[in-house]
Structure formats: structure tokens, C-alpha cells
Length: 240
Image (tube, rainbow, N blue to C red; front, side, top):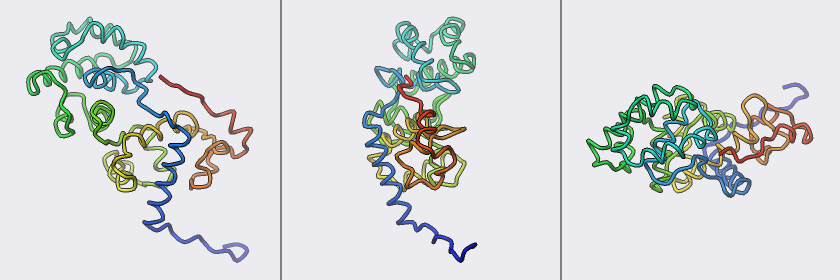
């Protein structure tokens, strides 16, 4: 190294766990009210809203769901829905034909296999049309109180920036991060990271100079470190 310096020692497993948990605590202090930004009143509504949120903002979904939830109140309602009517209601969320297929198929499966009630187990949820692990974990964590990690695009980007994982596969990321953070914290930790990704650790130019995790983040310097310049990049919430 120039100047006779030496490379820092690689981070130990114990060091990583301690750093990750400290970062999670700081995020908890920064976002004490972090929560799911989709509006819903029961597991079925959250499941439908989460399906709609693919490639769409929570804000847009929340503009659509009041009309949707008023018209379709049970799994049986969705299962018997007129496709054209459902498509028209959710059109503005994008990919509305595929989402309509998923919602109707999901509802039919819920009716046929689970008596019209959304199941509260991961292994059951992921068998439903249009429901992957990410969607299942959103529903489990927020509607059923079962700890789950939501690996969306923000979560993937930030956990790699944090040095918590080098994986790109969502399931591997879920398991790696889950091994660092206590299970009871998984759901709220997911919200904190997603909120941080929407507000400060933005994809193209993170506001590093305004980040409460600056001292602990190996990606510090990816964005502007000047506090004034960084503050201009911060996006205030809510995003619902």
C-alpha cells in the first residue's frame, strides 16, 4: 500500500453480526414508525394489494384499492370476478392483465383449498398463483404477525451496499440476512430498510452525507458525502 499502510483485516463473522445489528438499531431510531405502506384491512386485502404492487408504487396501489376493495370483499368475489371489470379497475397499476390472472387464480385456489380464507403459512401461500416468497412474507409479517423478510429491490440493493450479503438471488439474500438479525425483528427490519432505500439510500445517488449509517456502511462515498449536497437528495416520506 502507498505510504506503508496496510489493508484492514477482513471482517469476522462476529463483527458482521454486531455491525448488522447495530445498523438495524440505528434504522429503528431513524424510522420508529416504519410500517407497510400499502393500505389494507385484512389478509386478503393485503395479499391483493401486494400482487398489485409489482412494478408499481405503493402510492398508486393505494389510489386503486378503495374502489377494488369496495367491490370485491371476499375470495369468492374475486374468484367469480368479471375479468374485464377487474382489469379496468386495476389498469393504472400496470401489467393489469397478468395481475388480473394472478388475483383471480389466487382467489380460486384460496376458495378451493382453504375454504376462502388466506392461509397463514409460507408453504401454503407460495403455492397460490401469483404469490412468491416476497409476497408471502409481506402477508405473513404484516397480516399474521409471523416474522418474515421482504426482499424487494430496495432490500436487495441496500443489504449488498451494507456488506450484509454478496448474493443476488432473493432467497439466498433472505437466508443470509435472516442469520444476522434476530427473527423477531425480521418484519420491522424489512420495513426499516425499505424506508431507508426510498428516502436516503437511493439507487442512483444515495445521500451518504445525510445517512445515519455512514460510520458503519462500507459503501459510504457512493453518493455525495457533503451534508448540504446530500440533504438535497433526501426524499421525505410518506410514500403511501
